[in-house]
Length: 269
Image 1: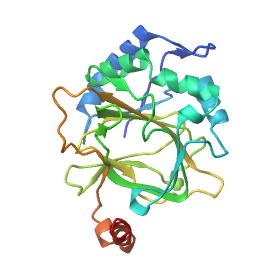
Image 2 (image 1 turned 120 degrees about the vertical axis):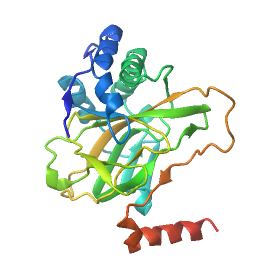
Image 3 (image 1 turned 90 degrees about the horizontal axis):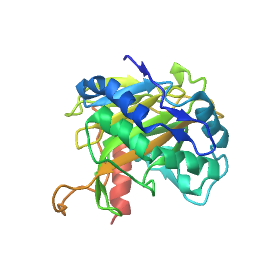
């Protein structure tokens, strides 16, 4: 697929100078491409962060375990995956993530997507820094919709890839699937400084379901940012607040997939 080069207007000052007006204009410039994309509104932007900024993120990526991490060894629901909360990272990384939650970032996203009143998550529930090791994967799913802590509805994902010298044979493609989970319609390689932004609803089926084929010393790293809006009316108590994993046709024939389902069922007894 075609990837668009566009750099966020951030200058590497001590406080990260993020230009509000320029951010809005950048979003407007790519709004048509975003809203007309299939199978659901999305865009893949290359060279997204200034070179110095993304290099500093990679340099500060925590190699040691922090105080607030989640590890996934859940088969189809995430395997060999590490999720790091930015609030437990060093001050440099925390400052960058605060910029991703700032008004200029929201202005860029609102102009890009047409979704007004976006709200960031200061707690980075489910988001932050992600790392998947060799053999790891994440099944195709549509994301949780309700942020229970803040009582707001999830509307957007933004994923920024941190993988220098990523080779196509490593795999790790982000796959976008049709509503009926019959066909993968797009694959996006997780190369360095590529950002993928997409709407999240019950039909935004995505994941990287093929096990990574990387050398042991290479992992798939990314930034995951989630954005929300307030509910227009009273919250429906039946609103789904869990991620919904969806099998591909070949997963229905896979022993690995069905064993993970049996394991979960037995665990919940």
